[in-house]
Structure formats: C-alpha cells, structure tokens
Image 1 (cartoon, rainbow, N blue to C red):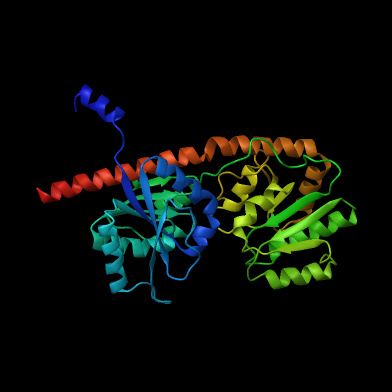
Image 2 (image 1 turned 180 degrees about the horizontal axis):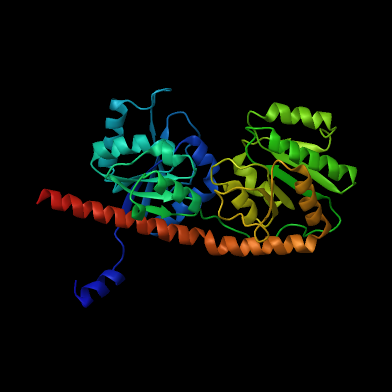
Length: 378
C-alpha cells in the first residue's frame, strides 16, 4: 500500500457492520450496565446490533429501540436442535450480518453452530475463570475471545481456547459519577449494603456478625443485604439468631435494574464473597461513588487493596469489622478512597474506550474473514 493509500484508509469513514449478539438471560441481567453503553456507542460507530434471545425470556426492550430482538426456540435440556440452528443461520444470512458474538461462554456452542451454518465468523466473551475448561479449544471460525480480566485471559490461554494473540483483554466499561457519593450528608444514618453470591452461607456469617458487632457498639447505621442463593436459608436463620431481622433489610436480588440506584444511595458497599465470575456489581458500586469493602477476588482487576477498596478475608468477621469500623470512623478517608476508585474506573473502565476497542476487534475480525473468503474463492 502506498503512503497516499494509507492516508486515505486512515481518513475514510468506517464501513457499517451488522453484528448478532447471543447471551443467556443471566448475562443480560448482570451485565446490563455494561452492554447498554456498548450498544449505544457501537451504533454511533456504525455497528448495528441484533440481539438473539430465547422465546419467552425477558422483555424486548433491553437496550432501547436501536437494538432489534430476534426470538428463537430451544429444547429445555438439549438446547436448539438442527432445525432451530438452520433457522437462526437463515436470519443471519438474510440480515447480512458480518459476524456473531457470544456474550458469554454458555452461548458459545450455539453461536459456533450458527456461524458455521451461516458461513460467517464469530467472537466469544468470557467472564469466569472456569470458562477455559468449559470452552475447550475453539475452531478456526472463532476470530476473537474477549476476557473480562487478566486472570480470566490467563486461564483461557492456559487451556488453549484460542491462539494467545486472539485472546483479548476486554475490561467492562461502565458510566461513573464525577465525585464520591458516600458520606456526603451529615445528620443521617450511614447506609451499608452487602451483596454478592449466596451459594455458601459462610461469607454471610461474617457480614451478619459484623453488623451485630456494629449494633452492639451503637454505630448509627442501616444495613441491607442484596443477594440470593442456596445459602439464603442459613443466612436468614443466623440473622434471626443474632436478633438482626429488625435491623437488616433483605432486598430482592432479582431487582438488577435498581442496583445502581441502591448503591448510589449507599455509603458503603460490601462485596461479601467471590464467585469466580467478574464482579460487575462491585465495579458498578465503585463507579457510583460508594466506599467499597471487598472479599479477596482474583478475577476482579479493579479490586486493589488500599486503592480502590479495602480487601478482607470473607472467612474472618473480625477483619471485616475492623475495616468497616475504620471507614465509619473516618468519613473523609472513606471519601478519599472512593475518589481514587472513581479515577481508576474512569481510566480503566471507560465505556467510550470499551466501544472503541470492541469496534476495532469487530472490524479486524470481519476484514480478516472477508480476505480469507476471497482467497478461498480464487
């Protein structure tokens, strides 16, 4: 390519792309604060998104009027059959989609089948350290794998999911407030919200014993727990034993759309337990200006002890109590911690940067696939 051609390519407008997104309902709920800005930003960058969803699951208006939703049927245990795959592939071809994107590992198998049937390429997002073993080695049709954190990317490479140069670090992007929101009002009780998976009751015992200790010391706090899972029954039972049911409000964990508003009103957010999946809710809490205490979590690059959050051992209620008391005793230091966290989120989790990175990955994948297709035809 001549210098003039390179200049023309750099200044010429990007060609429109059409991408099909596939995701399970849990991903759409958990990552709504990430996927929404992505869809809006990609539209501004001439990337049209079509969302493929299972029939009967959720509502249609996930990302707004700019994203079309296509429904498909699936068998409860075995997933979509050959006829459904063929129908989806027909929709991909008729929509002239340039590539497909599995927004989670659970959708990767279906997307690989549909892409193969439709004669196109695809990408896969990974949000959990277990995805490396779950995905196995993806075929040559997979153009890119997007890892939500450095630990997840390492896991994918170790399991040879794809060539290392195809496994991209793609941190989630979220909107953030300008200044800390914690401890901004004097004369009101401090609001402490704890969230995270409740598959085991053990971490929640630490949270509840900390709440009980703060009540004993007569701290002026209101406590909320926003979680659900197999450990819920034991957690409620311990709250009753500690005589906390009148002091702790259990919030329906399913109200994901209200989570940002809840943590924005919180002075302190406690991420009670790691799950092996990138902790988007803790990222949202950081982005909304709360002071954050977080259980040790290697999947979350944004949890940095003493900088963005105070990290604690989820099996050690004394440590959690000490660190929560330190925050409550020094609101100025808590706001300073939240301010550093906001600066980190702005630098490393910008929605605009995420849009630019994803658009570039899409365009490179589509261009490479188009070039390979032309070579096969000659």
